[in-house]
Amino acid sequence: MADHDPENTTDKTALDWHEGDMPYSRAFDDHFYCRSDGRLECGHVFLAGNDLPHRWQRGGAFRIGELGFGTGLNLCETWRQWRESAPEGASLHFTSFELFPMARADIDRALSNWPEIDRERALLTANWPDAPAGRVEIALEPSVRLTVVCGAALDSLQAGEKPFDAWYLDGFAPSRNPDMWSPELMQAVFRLTAPGGRFATYAAAGFVRRNLAAAGFTVERRPGFAGKREMLCGEKPVS
Image (cartoon, rainbow, N blue to C red; front, side, top):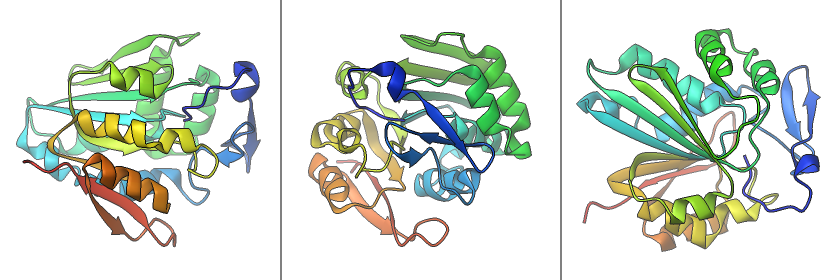
């Protein structure tokens, strides 16, 4: 979930497991998702914040970009809702940027906490490479495709060309991983957002809000998940 450039990658990928199957990054001193219910948090923050599933009802191709693939929980919950609500003929391309991709066994362990996404978990882990690197491309089903770009997000985004309809900004907490919320990265996200496209994030730190606004987004504060005071979402103006 991080966009940090440490000297020792092996140490940075080390996990602890809290409360059974809750992955915890030793390097960033943070959980991968909220401790109450990460799946419901995904729905509240990332889907609702991006006005989904409503916006993909228009059909055609829909592109979601994500900063921080982590366990793949956001992918699986989005995919589950897509299967339930997307119109016939629509397609979803979910692209995530991840510096430290997790091992298959760790993804499987973390996602096993939610029986609601058992189908998605099984298909994701069955197709996940033993040693993810470069661009991981997985056809999850005929209408759903996953790309995980392994490496520093800023480098990948600065080289990107095709815009996204929605963004999930899901790095580790800004206080623990400020590089993932830098002005340069937010500017790259803005450039790769289609006019009228949206972003959403659980983060509400003042410098994150200012960096998003400075990049060009209109920024809205909403109540956060599970009693958290605020989250942020917003839109790239059409003109």
